[in-house]
Image (cartoon, rainbow, N blue to C red; front, side, top):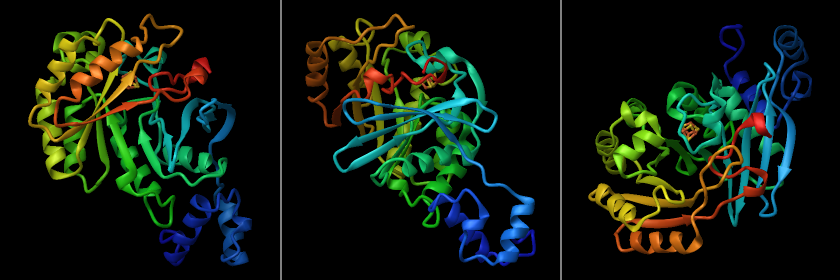
Length: 323
Ligand code: SF4
């Protein structure tokens, strides 16, 4: 607005119309003068994501296939859980990191999402559900820390009181452990939560299953995680337990050993099989044994229920090509 010679407060008004009232056109903005609306309409258009498909799971989770302006597709998932209404958003189309157990990794990398596209995933889902979204997790398609500038700009929209008004305290950025990105997040003014997808406490196995480990050694990732926990918010370590790969008691013990001295939570998630991948879900008994071992530690441990599995909306199952 300032660049157009218009009073800056008009920017706030238009921002509210777009992000809070889902305005698709300047003509509906009743607190803006007719001349200004006409002038804006002659120079700009308001565009947004389009819902291509909506799938509803028995547990109430909803997966949205969303089309971008260049007709590329991404997925985002709404997960209701009691009072908590979470949206899991994508930050990239595909992903360049090729973690072997992940459906998104199979797609390869297409492009980074823009900040407005990321924030629009939440806006459009909010427009299409009856509940107020309370939590955001950057855990959908892509590695958020590879697109950090846009993710940060998206958060400035989602947490703004004239935007989507979702507190940073209820916003989690999840990473496979990129040293540079975690460092940048540490130095940034953001107060979001950090989740690190650890999965393989044995570094050799981690390098094999999550090749990014070769350039981002666990030791350094954990050092930064500790710093994040002490300076910002307590870090959560995600552990996707996969049958016969990382489901032994020895793995649980090794995990606890690694996290010794790091104030953190551990989130255990039973692997969600994906048709094109050879990995399997461990038995409930194995998961329970693993959980019992973790519970001997001082960490807060949660066993995350798998949500929306039958619509391939669960963790690690997002891949727009196969929807
Ligand atoms: S787990 Fe995350 S970082 Fe790894 S391939 Fe999948 S989307 Fe990319």
